[in-house]
Length: 210
Image 1 (tube, helix red, strand yellow):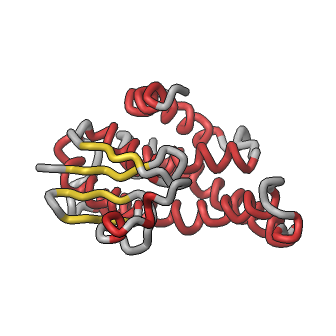
Image 2 (tube, rainbow, N blue to C red):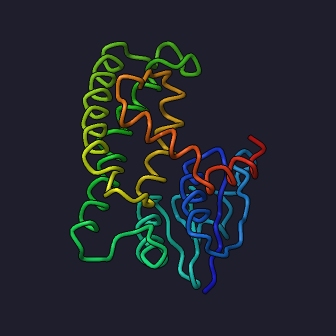
């Protein structure tokens, strides 16, 4: 088994980095300097023609798109560690459902809201109506996620999985950037606190000096 992980911590590659940390799978890290344009070099474009990260090469085969990478890592390495449901099981169906739901239905309005409210975006690029609509979508979906966690214990079932690690890592960043108050979602709030205390999360923070 050979894994090479092309990453930059200030990107969506961080979620794959956390997954690798959770799995404890040996891998080589290759830092991609986005400011210097490493992602546009011919040798990198052979691995990912989009010129983006995360990108991972497993046994000589490159992959890109974070959700695809997460699913593959979960199915190949996660089941034996109890971090991913058995393929074909009802829990596996839930894992795929909630992982994609979180990325599309929840994270999309979170980052839409950030784009339309952040002072880092030019004033002419912000749209107050879009921000208002996105905020309503965020809270609607947080209520759904809060109810799911309250019912199942975590997202898939009572045990922590890579779905929880992935979704919590993205939402922690998104909620911080959007300055959202999640205290009215008690199950969700407690779940985020559990995520922060995971050994893999603590180890990753230590590596990043945070």
